[in-house]
Image 1 (spheres, rainbow, N blue to C red):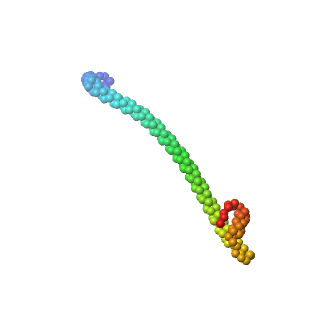
Image 2 (tube, helix red, strand yellow; image 1 turned 180 degrees about the vertical axis):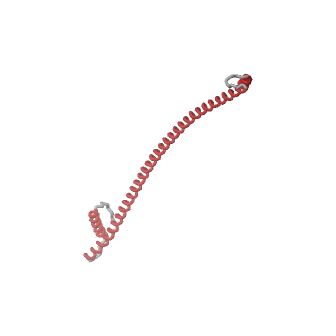
Image 3 (cartoon, rainbow, N blue to C red; image 1 turned 90 degrees about the horizontal axis):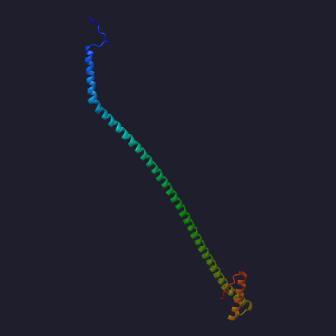
Length: 174
């Protein structure tokens, strides 16, 4: 019996080698071209997706920059509106202060006019009462009734004395 050595080729080796070369040729001719096309398509698809991703990243960066610019513009507008509101508030406060001062001045003038009018009225009332008192005192002192001319002179003297003591200087006569 002959022992077979696997290192020495025999007849089946050549058949197997020819079958392997035929399978390799069939695979190389019919299987590899579609597989290469599929791999190339996949590679092209991956490259286009990478290019689209790069483009999307650039668009996102541009959109981010646009968002930042819009945000800064909105902040600036808000600062402008706030500044304008502060100016309007200051102007309204100044107007309110001016109106308040005008109202104060008007009320003060009105009060002074009322005080002067009341003073004048009190002075006139005092003159009337004084003339009556003077007439009563004169009649008692003299013991007789005083005529109208003498009465007028006495009243005018009393009014002059009263005006001099109050310092009003208004010449009110009964």
